[in-house]
Amino acid sequence: MENIHPLVPFLYFLFVAAAAMFALHPVLVAAQFAAASFWSVRFQGWKAYRKRIPWILVAAAVTTVGNMILSHDGEMVLWYALGNAITVEAMLYGLTMGIVLVTVLLWISVAGNVLTMDKILALSGRIFPSLTLTISTMLRYLPLLKRRYRVIRQAQNAMGRGVDGNGTSLPGRIRQRSKEFSILISWSLEHAIDTADSMESRGYGSRRRSSFVIYRFRSRDGMHLAMIVLLGIIALAAALLPGMKAYYYPTLWLPPLSWQCMVCYGGYLGLLLYPAVIEAQGGKRWTS
View 1 (cartoon, rainbow, N blue to C red):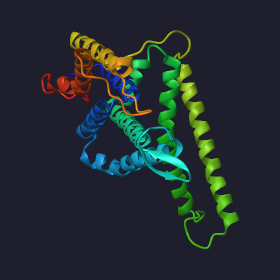
View 2 (cartoon, one colour):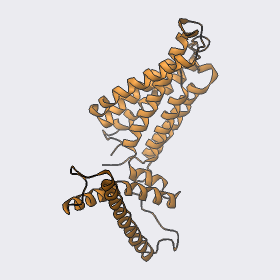
View 3 (cartoon, rainbow, N blue to C red):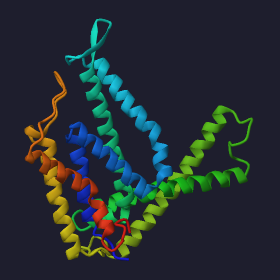
View 4 (cartoon, rainbow, N blue to C red):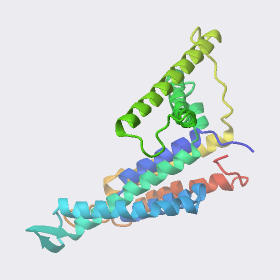
């Protein structure tokens, strides 16, 4: 199965995240949230999205209530609390910012599922080889240290030195954990020295190294890239141009509908739906 070049989804998520952060028009915010939710379910499954629903509601509620408490601007007053006005505009702005925050986090989550580590390394390996090697090594060590610590604890328990059982005093648990941590550090340092010797014996650092990338930039990728850049620029125009912006203070104001707005909103919607075009091309998922 052919692969989409990683640059295509990278730029896509860059544009949609930027558009989500800057667009405060209620219709665009709702469209962004709907698209982010749809692609989250599409790429990660309904079960994973269902687990996010509680924190989505909590984030929206916290930002809404927080803005109503902190901001007292606006003309439509709901009630007064401790002499401060609680306004409809503050409530709407807080709710909008909460949805924007949740939407950006959803896009980041989907991007993490689509842009796997091998794709990220393929994008940055030739530009920042040393930094890429450092990051990949760090990311490898996180699960590796966890597995090694589990092995150490199992070995200590098998020798009767573990602290998983009852009756061990607090000073004894601290000494045992310190010993296990010392073993883990010694093991990791020894492995790091072996790795460094192995890399030196293979000539690492003696000259500019070559890199192997399984992804090839094809004409199809160029077409997708051009469309994403075009739609992304239009979407950012819809989010940033003064005539397209929505204002919440002192009262809610939405820009009048014009042909310029229609073009920008159409490009914005096209950007949100563009992954469907990529998937429809030959029935191939761009996560492959």
